[in-house]
Image 1 (cartoon, helix red, strand yellow):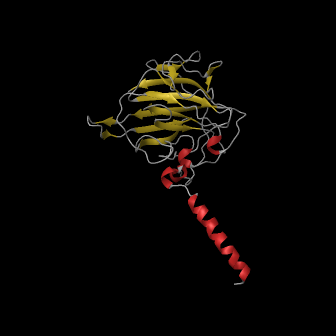
Image 2 (cartoon, helix red, strand yellow):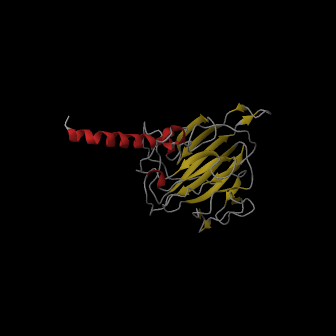
Image 3 (spheres, one colour):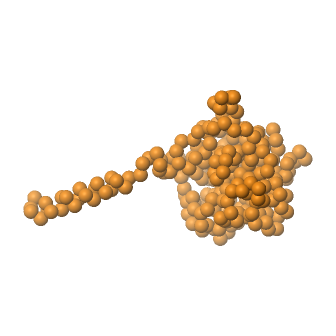
Amino acid sequence: MNKYALLFIPAFFAIDAMAQDKKVDPANDPKTTEVWEPVPKTVSPGKLPQEAPSDAIILFDGRNLDAWHSVKDPTKPAAWTIDDGFFTVKKGTGNIETNKKFTDYQLHMEWKIPTNISGEGQARGNSGVFLASTGGGDDGYEIQIMDAYKNKTYVNGQTGSVYKQAIPLANANKQPGEWQYYDIIWNAPRFNEDGTLSKPASVTLFLNGVLLQNNFVLKGETRYIGAPVYKKHGPASIKLQDHGDPSPAISFRNIWVREL
């Protein structure tokens, strides 16, 4: 080793020490809970959505959002934009949730990624339906909605996943600009008087008529960072997410629920 090489040794160790200092604590790193493989197979879905049966509670009939309110301020109505038979996320206004609270139910809802969608991964048409809202923001149990048509992301975060808990059994997404539909069976968790879990929640989910979740038993509420946990709650609202990514906003229509 020559005398000039020795001059670089302190600098090398200083840079290495800085890199070590900048490492993210796994407990606070969302990538720790991302799963990328195996990738669900692609399935071409059918075209027919479902009309509401006679005993359904209509959550959106194409005319108003009277069944919903703002999550940021429950005293205020939902501020999302209503158009001709559908409504669209109004970015920056926050999540919305139903006035009525539910326990076990069957849910039908239709949604559309706009044709002018941009971005990639989780920043492309991202939203979600929380099957039980347990607090403000994104507290609760989320089924992911996003553009997963030829758009790669971690598979436990793509459309039809129980967010960061259950990878969908298939990718049945239609291309942007087409209406898609979820049919969901939700069985809420049950708790003992002392707050401990008596029975975990479970969900069965179809996207465009294709089974994506087959009676999946949840490990707790869905979380962006960290492991899922349960906390005691009773009947809860259904919540839709204003995700906040910069891509054009997605739309919803024909939402109804049957209590079980």
